[in-house]
Image 1 (tube, rainbow, N blue to C red):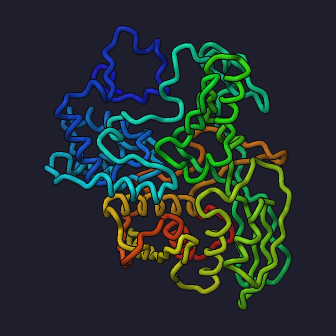
Image 2 (cartoon, rainbow, N blue to C red; image 1 turned 30 degrees about the horizontal axis):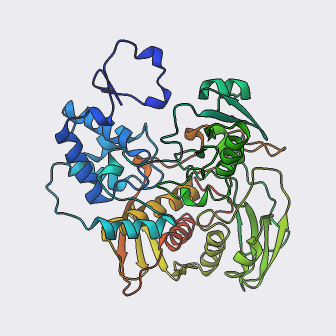
Length: 457
C-alpha cells in the first residue's frame, strides 16, 4: 500500500501509525496505472497465485511516481527486498517493470489458464484480475458474523475477531533464533564416494493456511488460486472450519498464523546418504509414508533406512520431496549434468555458469509459452535457493525455532542468477515443474562441488 504516496508493507504497519494519513491500495491507483501494470505482469507471467502481487505493484507504482528507473535491475532488486514472491522467482517481475509502458498484444488467457493449472496441480486463474487482487483466496468473503478460530497447539480458541481469537490462543509472536541450523540425521557409517545431508526447510508459500465454512455448507478451498507447492495438501483447516461451524451453529474462519505454518505445516523429509562409486549405498531418511519407494525408483541399489526423528511433520506432497534429493545423488555420483525424468513424463536438464541458470525442458508443446516459462523460472529459483541458502533451526526436541519469513533463507531477487528456459519438446503437454526443480537442484549442487551438507552457502 501507499501511505501519503510512500510505499509501506501493510502487514507490519499498525493502524495507529496511519491515523489521519492518506492510504492508497491497488484499488486506488489511477485507471491508467492499473491497466498498464496489469498488462505488463500478464504479458511476462509476473504473477502466478497473485497473493503477493498487489503489494509489489503498489511499491513499484509508488517509486515510478517518484521517477525511479524501473528498467535498472539494481533499483528493482532493492525495491523487491521488502517482499516475498515464492512463485515467480523474481525475474518475470523485473521484466514486467522494465517494460511496463509497452503495448502488448491480446493473450489467449484460456490457454494460459490451462498451462498454469497443469503446473500448479490445481485450478489456477490467469488474467488482469490476478494482478489487481480481485481473485478469491481461502479466507476471502466470509460473512461479517463469522467467528474466528486460532490454533493453540492441538486446541482451537474462538473469538469474534482475529485479535481476540489469537489473544485467547495465547499466540506468541514469531522470531528468528540464534540457534544454528544443522541436518538432523547422521551419515551412515561407511567408505563413501559421495555423501549428502539435508536439513529442515520451509516451503514458504506466502498465503498461510486458511478456510471458512458456514454451518450447512462446504468449506472454502485453502489452495484457492495457488497450489502451495503441495504444502497445503495435508492441512486440516478445511475440515476444522467445517467442524467448528457445525459445532457453533455460525460461520467460522480457521486461520493459521505464520508460526503455525512453520510449526505444523509439512516439510521435505531430511535425509543423510552415503553412496559408493558403483551406485550402492545407504540412504537414511526421516520416516515418511512412501519415501522409500520414491528414493529407490532413482537409486535402486541403495538400502533405505527410515528413521523416526523429532521435528515438524514430513510429506511427499511437497515439490519433488525425496525424489529430487535422489536425483541430486544420482547426478552427483555421475559427475556431470544429465536429463532428469519426472513422474509426469517430463524431463529437464540444467547448467549453472557465468551468472546464469540454463534449463532445457522436454514436456511437450507448451499451451502458453509465457506461463510455461514463468513456472519453470519459479521452480528453478526454488531449487537454487533451497540448495544454496535455505534452512530452518529445529531444536533437539523437534521444535522449530525459526518462525519469521526472513529466517527461512529464501534467496533474494538481487542474489538470484538470470534464468534461461528453452523448450525442446513437442506433442502432449506435461507438467514440467518437478523435472525443472530436480534438474536445477542437481546442477546447483554439482556446480558447488557436491558439498556434503545443505545449504551449501
